[in-house]
Structures are given as structure tokens and as C-alpha cells.
Length: 213
View: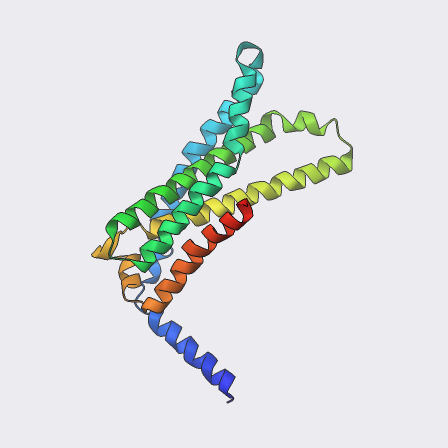
């Protein structure tokens, strides 16, 4: 066995040892997913109904104002900024797992980011139902197909990202050293916790600042 293989095996054993303190049920609790589905339903369905109602009765409503509100609700800028703050707090909670305030803050911001995402998802679904069919009828077949594919891809991305954010937020729910995910994090090597902090907190903020210039 060459040196590279030995180092890889050593690293693999190190990671296995570090992760042995975690309970797998903490990562895939059915209760978390059921609650996530319930939260998604109560954000998506009213938003869809609102878009349909606004479109159906636009002659009797301040349509321009409400349509602008729908566009702002779908916009990703606020969702991105708030979600990045949640990830930064998540990384800080992993670095400082005993700090319940940081964990609770990360949880609240991440689950509320998820709620914003489900609202956007509901508004998009509402537009698909209430307005897109009429617009597609005006387009050539290939253009309509491309638009449908683009919208489907966008919806899938929003769905996956929201589920991921909900899952990350709920990892913080145990908060502090009372038990759960963060109790396992507390037993991790400081070097791993610091690497997670850099990856989740420092790197995204740095890239965001560079992109904004």
C-alpha cells in the first residue's frame, strides 16, 4: 500500500471516528419531514389561491399593485440574503455548539427563509395555473416547450433548496448541549468544526461581497 492510500485510509478512519457520536435518526426524522410538508402546504396553497383570485377578478381589484407584490414575492434577492445569514449562523453554531442563542437564531432564520421560499413557490404555481397557459398559446410550439421546461426547472430548484434549508434549520432545533445534533457536534474535533464554519459562514459571505462589487 502506497503512502497516498495509507493517508486516505487514515483520513477515512478519522472521519468515521468523528461521526460515530451522531445518531442517524437525527438526520432523517419522519416528524421533521411531516412538519415540513405541513408548513409547505399552508404557505403554497393560500399563495396559489391568491394569485388565481387576483387574476380572475383583476377588474375589481388594484391589479397593478397586487401584481407588483406577486413579482416581489417571487424575487430571489431577499430570500438569498436572509438564507445566507441563516447559513452563516449555522456555521457559527457548529463552531460554538454550546451557544444556545446562536443555534436558536440559526433555526429561526432558516425556517423563516424556508417559509419565504414556499411563498414564492406558491406564487409561481399560481402563475402557472392562472396566467401561463394563455401566454403559451401565443407562442410557437418550441418556445412554449422551452418556457415550460425552464419553469419546471425553476420549481424543482426552489423545492429542493427549501427542503434542504428546512432540514438544516431543524438540525439546530435541539439548540446547545441539551442533546441532539449539536451535542454530537460538540464532540467533534475543533479543526472539523472550524472547517465547517469557514465553508458555511466565511466562504459564502466572501463570495457575496466579491460578487456585489
